[in-house]
Amino acid sequence: MENSTYSKQYLVYVRKSTDDLDNQKNSIDYQRAQSLNLARNQHLEVANYTLDGFCKNGVIEEKHTAFKTSEMTIDKNGKVGYEIKRPKFRTLVQKLSQGEFAGIICLCWDRISRNEQDGLIIKNLIDRNIDIRFVQADYEKSSSGAIHRDIDSIFSTHYSRLISEKVKNTFDKLRDEGKCTYMTPIGYFDHGSDNKPIDPERAPIAKRVFELYATGEWSLNQLARWANQHGLTTKPSRSKRTKDEILSGITLENKPKISRPVNNKTIENILKNPFYIGKLKINKKDNTQFIDGHYHQPIIDVSLYNKVQEVLRSKNVSIHYVDHDFYIYRGLIRCTCGRSYSPYTKKGINYYRTRCVDECNNPDKNLNESDINGVVEKLLEQIHFSKKELIEIENRAKIGLDNVNEKRSKELDDLNNQRKRAYDDLNYLTKNKITLLRNQAMTPEEINQEEIRLKNELITIDQKTIAHQEGANEMLKYVITFSELIKMANLYYKHALDTEKRDLVTQVFTELVFKDRKLVNYVAKDGFEALLRRHTKENTPPKTSDVKSGSAGRIRTYNQLLNRELLYH
Image (cartoon, rainbow, N blue to C red):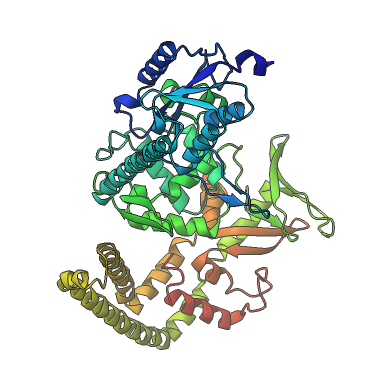
C-alpha cells in the first residue's frame, strides 16, 4: 500500500511559469536544487516515488501560466466548487488529502499558488496539519504566522496578475501598431510580429484558390483536391500536446514541425481570412474586429475577396472534378425527379444513368452521350436571330431605343446624385476628422471604415455610370453582332473537342433535364435564357407558364437584351 510506504516521506513541487520565462526564480533546476537542499538540512526524506505523468523520483515538475482562474460553481446545497486547472497539482492535492505522503516542499508561496483559489486550497491543507515546507519562508503556527502567510499570498496573487497584465498590454500595444501577434495563414512566413513576408511557393497557389472559387464553379472539397495536386500544404507547425505529453513534461519545442495536406476546412479558412487583403483580426469580448495591418502585403484585392464571400454564402455546387474521369456533361444533367445522371463508359461509349426516386415515372434512365450532343446542337442553333427577326427588330427599333434612352437618362441622373452625395460625405469626413475625434463622435477605426465604404461606393457608381453611358444604338449593334458571332455555334460544337464542348455548354447552360431520353427542360444562363425562350412552345421545351410565343416573344427578348440582361454578364 502506498499509504504505509510513503506516509512519512515528502514530495518536491516545482512549477515554471510560461509567462515569465526569464525570471531566475522560475527556473526548474533552481527550484529543485533549493528544495532538495532544504530536505537535507531539515532531515526530511524525499520519497523515491515515480508515477508516469505525475512525478519522477519524488519531484513534481509542472509548467503552467502564472495567473489563471476558473469559474466557481454553487450547487443546490450551497456548496462552492471550482476546477483546478493544473493537472499535476490536482493529483497532488488528492494524494495529500488521502494521507499518502507526509507533505510537500517547494520554493515559495507563488510557486505553488497562482491565485486566490489555489491559495485557499493550500491554506486548507495546512489547517488540516498537512506539512507544507517553503524554502524562502517559515510560517509559524500562530496568528502572526497566519498573517505572514496571508501577506505572501496577497503578493503572490499580485505578482501573477502583474505578469499576466504585462503580457496582455504587450499584445495590445503590438496590435495598436498594426503588428500581427498570431500565426499568419498559408502564404506568409512568420519572422516576428512586424515581419510577415510572402511565401513565394504557397502564396501564388493561395491566390489562385481565391480566383477559382470566385467563379462559383468549385466546391471546397474539389478545390482542396486541386490544391493538393498543385503542391499546396499547410505551414510547418507542431501538433498540440496530448494530455499524456503535458503530464510527462514534453514541451512544444521538443516536437517537430510538420506540413500536412490541405483539406476542405483548410480551403474554407483561407477563403474567409481577411489577412489576405491586409487586415488583422482582433478578438474582443463582444465582437470580432478587423484593422489594417502595417507589416504584411496583401495577396489579393478587396473586390476578389468580396466576390468569394458572396459565393461562399450562395453555397454553389461544384461542376469541376479534378479527381474524376472527364465527361462533358458531368453534373449538368438531371431527371425530372431531381436526381443527377452519373457518367460511365461501356465498350468505349459514354453513357449517363440516374437512380431515380421510387415514385419517379421516368421509363428510360440511360442516356447516350451522342444523343445529348445532338440535343445541345439543336438548342445552340436557336440562339441567333433569323433574318425575319432582324427585320422585325429594325422596324421596332426606334420606339424601343427611345424608351431605353429615356430610362437610361433617368438612371444616369440618379447615379450623378449618388456620386455627389458620396463626395460630399467624404469631403466632410476629411475636413472634420479632428473635430469628430475631439468630440468623440467617431473613433479612428470608425472614420477609417467609413472612408473605405464611401470610396468603394464611388467605385461602384463609376462602374455603373460607364455601363449606362453606352448608347442604345451601340447596344443594338452589340446584340446584332453577338447574334452573328454565335450563328455557327452549333456547327462549331459538333466538331469541337470534348473539353471545348464542356466549356461551351457550361457557358450557356447550368442544367439539362431529361425524361425518357428526351429533353423536357433546361436552365440557361443570363442573356442566353432570353434568346432561347423567344421561340414557340413547339420549338423549345417550356420552362414556365410565362413563356411568350411568336413576335411577342421576340419583342420581349429584344427588350431584355437592350436592358443589358446579356451584356452585364
